[in-house]
Amino acid sequence: MPMKVLDATVSTFGEVFEKFRSEAANHKANLILFLADKEPSTNLSWCPDCVRAEPVIYKKLESSPDDVVLLRAYVGDRPTWRNPVHPWRTDSSFKLRGVPTLIRWEDGAVKARLEDHEAHIEPKIEALLSGN
Image 1 (tube, rainbow, N blue to C red):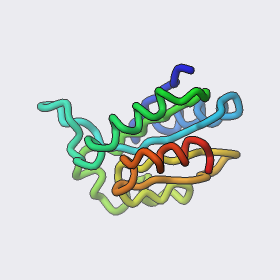
Image 2 (image 1 turned 45 degrees about the horizontal axis):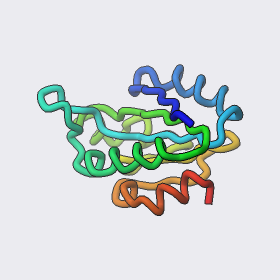
Image 3 (image 1 turned 135 degrees about the horizontal axis):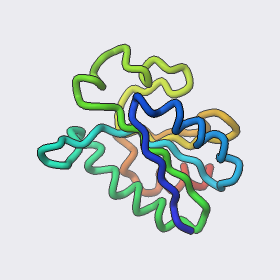
Image 4 (image 1 turned 90 degrees about the horizontal axis):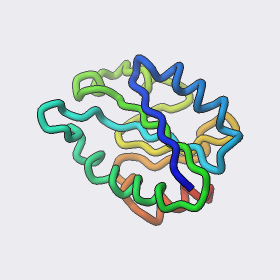
């Protein structure tokens, strides 16, 4: 099945996340990928772990037979993300510590997560996708 992708920034997240949540019951897997913004001069992420993980994550999700929705949430540029009071660092639901972070959203809560150092590992992505 085709993967549905929603994109959000810090400023648009509330509205996009509400749409994501309202449609969650219609999909087999609902995932949120928090990742770094791309540098305008290179069109590459400033985050090396994001550069490594993104293609692996997309490949796994696109090859899934399940109905998957991915909300890509861009944390901002490096100074914005480094701010200790970044909204997703302090949010009680997400408690982000690093990017990329891939979250499985189920029943209105974070069910499982893969953080920066493990977000590129295919078997872990598969387990998160399957809900195990």
